[in-house]
Image (tube, rainbow, N blue to C red; front, side):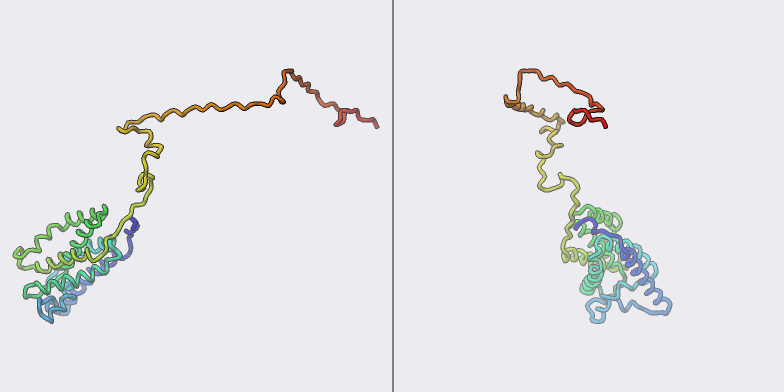
Length: 265
C-alpha cells in the first residue's frame, strides 16, 4: 500500500457531520415532543436492556452531555475516514456493538447512555493501530490523539466520577484495542525515487560513492591508465622514396572534357 492510500473524500467531512447532526436531531425530538429515550439505553444483564447496545450512543441526558461528545466525534470520525477509509464503516459499526455488549455485561444496574463509549473506541483504535503499523504518519496521528484526548484515560477507572459510565468508557477502550487485531496490518511501501533506496543497492558500484574512502573523506578518482595504441603497419607496396609533385591547372574555356580544342562552327 502506497502513500496514496490517504485520500480526501466526501466521507471525511460528510459522515462525521451527518452523525453529529443526527445526535442533535434525536435530542431535539426528545425535548420538542417530551420523549424520554433514557429507557432505551443499556440496562446491564437484562433482556430489554440489549436494545441499548444499538440505541445508547444516540441518546444524551442534557445539552452539555451532547456538546461534550460532539466535538471529539467530529475530529475522531474525520481522522478515521481519512486514514482508515476502507475499514472505517466496519470499525464504526462493530465498535458500537462490541463496546455496548461489554457495557451490558459489566455495567452497573442503571441506564447507560451517550456516545462517549464510541469516542473511547475511536481513541483506542487510532492510537493502538497507529503504533502497530509503525508508519510515520499513523504514529504521528497516534501521538496527536494522546495529546488531545490522553486525559480521558482516567475516566475508565471507577469512583473517579460517579455520574459518568466508567464501564462504558472502559468497554470502548477495550473494544477499540480488540478491533486493531481483527483487521490486518496495512503495509505501506515507500515510493522508490533513488538508486540507494533499492534493497539490492551496492555502494561499491556507485560512481558517486567511489569518490569517498572508508572514512568518508572525499578523494579524487584514480587516473585512467594510458594505453598505447599499436601503430598500423603500412604495406611497402604503397610506400615510395621519390617525391611526387602535382601540378594543378585551371580549366580553359575552349577545351572539352578530354582537354581537346572544340571545333569552330
